Structure formats: C-alpha cells, structure tokens
Length: 162
Image (tube, rainbow, N blue to C red; front, top):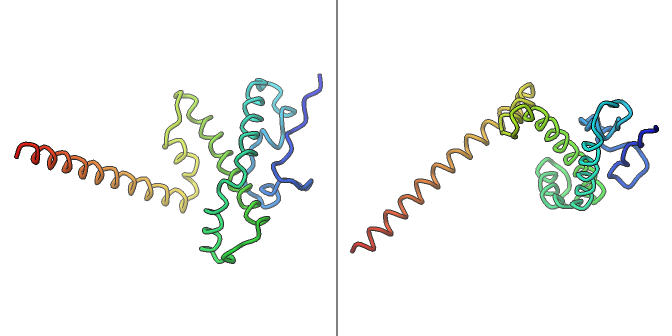
C-alpha cells in the first residue's frame, strides 16, 4: 500500500514552504507525511488536512495586524502584499506547530493548559519572560475588572436603598 504524498504548502508558488526556507520550525506531519510515521493513525492525518483547509480559508485574517507590526519593526508603512502574506504564512505555521506540540504535551492530562505552552517555550528566555509578563498583566487586569464590577454592584444596591 502506498502512502499519500504530503499536502501542498499553503503558498501559491511551487517553491518550498516559506517557513522551511527561513529556518522557522515546521510541523513534522506537514513535511514528512505518513511515510516516516507508519504507526500513526490515519485519523490524525485527516484532522491535520482539515486544519490546513481551515487555514487556507482564513488567509489574510492577520493582514492588518501584521502590517502594523512590520511597520513598528522598521518596514514600510504599506508593505508589499506578498511580504505580508509570507510573514502570515510563517506565523500561522509556527503557531500551528506550537499548538500541535502543546496538544501532545497536554494529551496526558486530557486538556490543554497555558502551562503546556510555557513548557514548550521555556528554553527561549525572551519569549518565556514576555509570556510570563503578559500573563501576570492579564491577571492584574482581571482583578481590577472584578474590583470595579463589585464596586458598581455595591453602588447600585446603595442607590436602590435610598
């Protein structure tokens, strides 16, 4: 029985995947397919191809955000659409790969947690520290919102009693 060939890259050109060309991490199931993992269940390949199909439908979803980020890092205010598409492909592939790895880490517990992502980036100290900072800021904002909601409720009940 012959295994199916790997899925085509999301980029329209016949050249290798942009992330592979730049050295960014790639998802092993997209580059090697089922040929190297003969023991893998076909269901995981079906899930992966459906995920790729949904990614193709979302192309351009991050375009404006990436344009602003690229400008902030020194690119032109209106970068070429091809450049934005390439950066988006690289980012989406990196995030997808990270999520697959986090799912594998979290599969032992049966659910995906923030700590799974922190575990994966623990050796990349700038990313790890930035994530910890953003998570602590998020927690502070939650506490502030909670305190604000409680004070609003107290004010509303005080007005009702008067």
